[in-house]
Length: 230
Image (tube, rainbow, N blue to C red; front, side, top):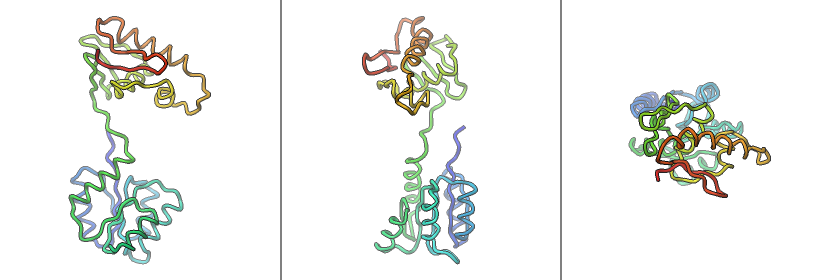
């Protein structure tokens, strides 16, 4: 099940904070709220949100201070400043301190949602559809099963991972380096894994292609492999 992105709103105007939480939740996100910099910084550490909406005018501590501390500690969170301080100098200061985006108040809520979506698109993995089809080959990504037509395919966990990667990149050629990095999670180019990949690819071809008249898995000599309709 795809996890909902978590957004933290740090805003001392409780009426505005409540409206933001309600509107952003209605757009499908999980939303938390804090009314002070200290409370917000505590939640950032505890929950590790994906995105932070940050007001600059907060009681006891300026919003830029918390942003500076977040960046100094290397906390990986996108930050969108949402403030009435909206001069060019204010924007420059906010972006230089480490904000990813900046909006002045009053603001358009549809534009705010569009900016939230754009920021999250940079950090969240794309959603994999439950079913992926290539010709008569169908993969169920949740049940981790595969079939060609009416025939269920008996795949090992590794073979399914390999086939899923090829199906997600259907029509494109993937290299052995890509497979080593993304399927086998090998980060060193000195790891001797090419033979392992070739053996697994041969076994996969025997299961998904050999019993069927239409061949989907192709070897591109000297480059890699591709899964595509003929």
